Image (cartoon, rainbow, N blue to C red):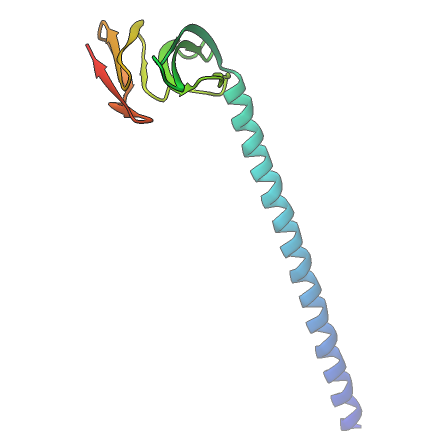
Length: 145
């Protein structure tokens, strides 16, 4: 009689082990799907917030004899933030879209820009809060006045 009980115990242990493995696999799949959904939600929220901003081109100045251009634009991200003046140096033929921010200069006050030489670029601004002020972008030396 003891041998029969031992057989049942062995089968019962194997059944419990199989059930636990299936439960762990199901939990793993559920957590993987949950992580994917959360990541997708965060990405969607980021895209929604980024698309809430708009860029209005103020001026485009081509690099003399070069392949680049400077773009001055106003970035407006809605009622909760103040609009900012931004400057980017990008390739001719490229465009600024509403997800782009300035890669050279960002401030609250208006700016005036010009190319002083092939690889020298000048930015004049009245002061105020500056958020970005690069001195070299894409091999172009940026001078501030």
